[in-house]
Length: 478
Image (cartoon, rainbow, N blue to C red):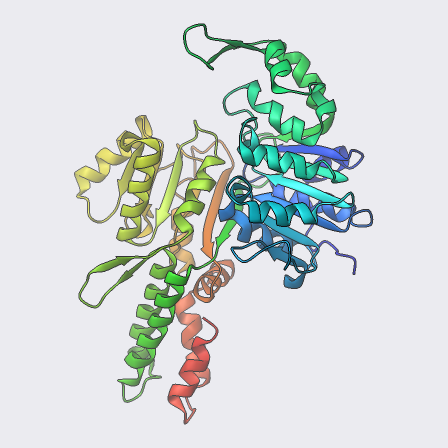
């Protein structure tokens, strides 16, 4: 069955599709927030009469996000999309139209490589998302994905940071598309013509040559746009990234539901508004805390859970240009601590500031001043930092965890999107693919409260004689 689009392209996305459609290979060098994935999906959709499948390589943490984007923008169904996992082999591949594969797995798993190799034929389209991850010409994943894609009729790469270190980053990305683009069959011949190395430090590039010639060679195959150039875009850009719950998280997610049933049944009238609000809020808080990677026991002790959310955050940050400041909103203090520790380890403690209820007024002021002057990251709770602050120094905002009310969200958004902001602001949401965060997304989209919505569902069945059965039935949707 032919797959149709369900959303319209923006003007710059239409321009990208029109430029790259005539060619079998192409690159979308588009800033985060400008819709690279939507554009890639449209290119694949236009070619569906000439291809049997799309093989989409992306970061492991972004596989769920790719699936979400395909479902959001097309009439494809869940059965049309297959995400590689730890059980996938070349013997058990299902029939699908879209296959999503973790890019890192190519460098570490022969099992994944063999399965991917079986998929790619002359009637395939191969997409490498975040192609800066294949810029290393010696990397195993670079060589494997390049060899796999040679058979494919169509090849496409996507990234917002094509040359983070210099023109040397272009070689492997262009070679993946076709050696004919640059005309070099090896890294040696490319580097001899374009790179000058240090005599003192082995491998250090100290100068590059013939950059205008390189730009002219790749120009027919590349569509490039920045946020600032998309003048027809609204002042707010929104992106969502998804991850799955781990087995560890799922165990505690189910435990939170069990505790909710026990809490509610303690009441004589578990459906009364006053009594039911407390256990509902406690349930939702527990479920979302699990999504953010931790569980708080009744005695106050905290259990850190294995999760993919932090890896997703770090992968999203790598897509943002290095010079740009970033605000990260969290809901829970413990999650803030985990984020600060991860960023400190990855970028240095001096690059991270925090703003939350555990700091006094002077400490908060000092952290904001330091962030504006020198640090890159501000990690804050929405309760403490969502009101009154001017954070227009940043135009990239990541919501690691959302609150339950639209009013809380919009207050946090307005810290950046206000007088003094000269650039479009990109808001990035990280979500776990589960019931509670689906409800939060719906509540924010309709400017409501997730707790109030659930109370309405409870009210609708409050006359049931089977209290426990009806409560458990409500929980099945979470």
